Length: 384
Image (cartoon, rainbow, N blue to C red; front, side, top):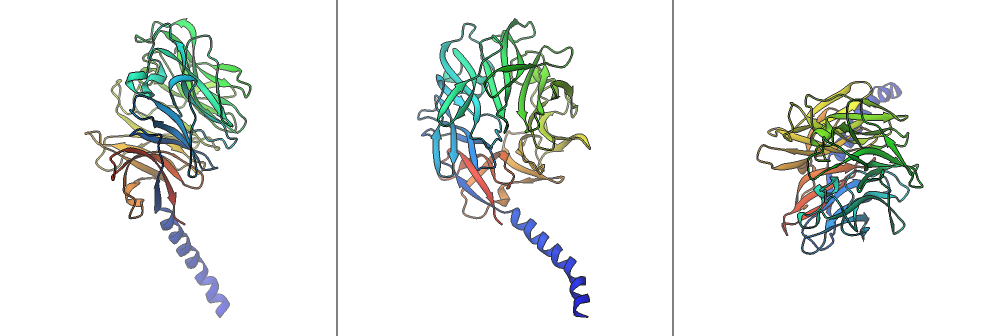
């Protein structure tokens, strides 16, 4: 009798334990991360070693540097000789390699804004070459272009392959001034050798934003435009074995931008839901089973962007209302949730955006420190 009763009660006990665990995982402890002396910082990437990377403004806010947080240790990654550097996209490897963009001290002969300029302070964003970089063991190394002036590096996988995009020497008539040179997606080998990844037929430019350990790459295909978003992102694409294919869209013909691909090939990103170049995106998730799906917004909001994803398919990003007020979200198994109510009491910060999540569920992004009014990088750790 007791054995029979125990077996009847076991499923209920397991269900209760699972429910209790799920509830515990929905509560987080938030830590504000030290900056580099300016009034703005953000965490843009977190790997499974707990390394958070992003950028911090220097005092005066006229320049910013790529930043690495390892626990309580803060490291300024420096630049390639210029004023600015940033880690923009999630960098998921555990090899100790960080990839991003950095200015050199070499003048830009065409004085383009280039893709980098949109991530640097206005006072120092143009005038010199900007290149993709790889940083490891305290050394920042520039990645070569395809013959043109500028480059841009995004993610690096556990095989040491880095992706991004770089200019070639073609004067592209689809560019919007001051942009002049065409650019193509690139995969850099561990030794830095670049391989060009083609756009879709009929497009002139491409850019790669993320790579997984299988070598699957995601990015955009379109026209040169302003060298960031708009119709340079007419199509969201994936390269598998070097072959490019579209992954579809959620209704728009601009800003279709994958930002992350996990180990099983799920793809997260954002794109406009209607035609036109005005920036009005929704977050999306693409899976092999279901294709591309609009993840919507938080209640009352009009736009959203996915910024990062982990191997279990949990997606983070930001959702914004019509007035431009934004808040970080976590999307999990069909539901988008506001991160702010998940923080434990006593964490005095307002979460503006969640930019990446590791496989333990730890999240990084940007918040406002209510005590100082500064924009700060944060680490949100689930409470078990």
